[in-house]
Length: 303
Image 1 (cartoon, rainbow, N blue to C red):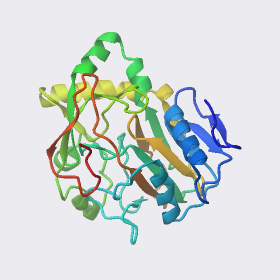
Image 2: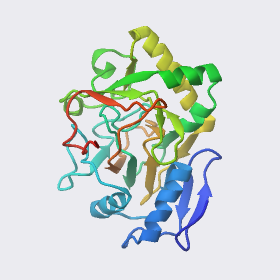
Image 3: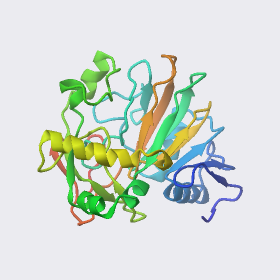
Image 4: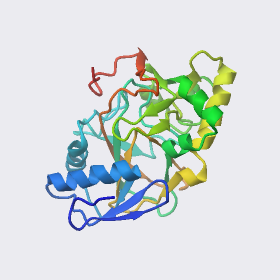
């Protein structure tokens, strides 16, 4: 790839996804060359791991805002005090121990997510991030054609309330769970999303995807498990080991991630700021649509 900003060094973490980015000072003012380098590298590698970047909440917001308009912290969960765009990712409140793409239960999920390390356990606590485009490319042709034709309903109110099939919030405290589902959201998305900038096709599922349009519960679960198994194949995944003052930026439009609960209940705290996204489009050109809930307070919905 072309490096726009002088001094930037990019080291690939796997042959499919992820790169370590050094040589950029993100703690000062961000000039247009630095922002162009961030965006170019993110589109190429989908995940950027940026070490030695101490950030307060305002600086993290400014970095994210350089990449696009910010969302609020979350459609239902309260923000960090005094920082309406910042979500505290705190193991004391919940452990999101499941594969997911951020906030896919609304019609225009975030385009980009930034995570900054605040308190890191002495072991464990890694984040796995998967390349959904690589998964799509490697589907056998009959499965690829099937995926192209399907749409899925994503919701924030699902089986951590009604059944035990998905453990995404099984470790959440009761107050957090109640807050998370306080307003019900459902959106219908294409199962294959076309990336609005690169044109790549990626499988668009994750833990909030609960049923396939036109199919019953068991058939939906079977198909979702089948396609998820391709997304999470080890070769499609980069394992991010957290370090103090580390910033991670990932393209939420074409990745899934999983925060591993392997740190014995020790403190693990990150802060998340997300960039607003467009409405997903499938290979047939049909856009996602909101079924339940108005998320415009969280992120403006494009026309």
